[in-house]
Length: 144
Image 1 (cartoon, rainbow, N blue to C red):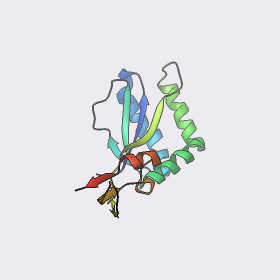
Image 2 (cartoon, one colour):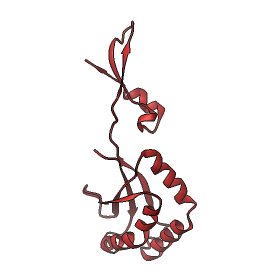
Image 3 (cartoon, rainbow, N blue to C red):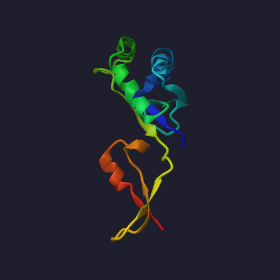
Image 4 (cartoon, rainbow, N blue to C red):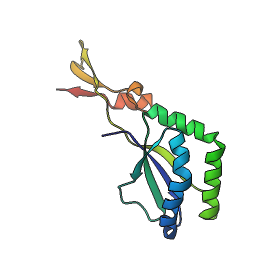
């Protein structure tokens, strides 16, 4: 499994094909300049009013850095404004750029000592790409 991010927009269902062409012409080049390679359309069945495309960032951190840079990129803002004008829906363009799937790295195996938890444990943490420290504690599991 490779790391993938998903760019999705809420659009009118009849505008899907035109939106896909506009995405390829105006949005994708800006995303590529920020290090997010094209990974094709989203393979899952989607609601009629959502159009999604997959991107291949190098790491979760690289995706976060690209999202931050996009907020300050005038070309990105201009592209979003053009999409809003070309695909009006009565509000500004609702869009999202988030992690779609991420692989689990090789876990760190830690020998546990005395107590109720003995044996080998797999530990996953923020350094493995998990977004929150609270999730890390929920994803520890015992290896039997």
